[in-house]
Image (spheres, rainbow, N blue to C red):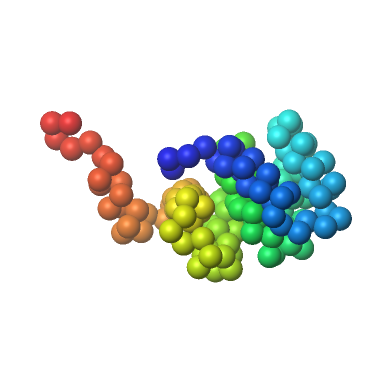
Amino acid sequence: MNFDPAITAREALTRAYVHDDLGDTQPDIEEAEETFSSETGLEARRAHETLIAIGETLPDARAFQEFLIFITWQQVTEETIPRHFHKGVQLTEQFLERFGAQVQGTDVYERIVAIRQSFKQGLGDRSESMLDEYDRDAFHGGD
């Protein structure tokens, strides 16, 4: 990935507050995000789960859905277990299905595709396109 998921998550959340209709969930989002950003372990996991649950009630909130994808990567780095990788794949695929046509050709699209690939790689998916990228990036004799 050529970007910082934590910074990208923060930017997406800022856009969500401005552009998405978060309704009466905004105070709950702010509280859970504050906990997620400042805590570790069980408290961070609970805050992440709260944010994911709120996201399930806001399927059309594009920037918020993007935010959820990138904080799920943060959760993966905090607690590297298959459940978080699976959730990341699910969130990215739902995002691309719902919003892919709207964001195609943008940085948002490229980042979502890149992080989806990272979630899949975390689950051991070494599809041909991933192997091609690995081969391009790998050192070859004489490098």
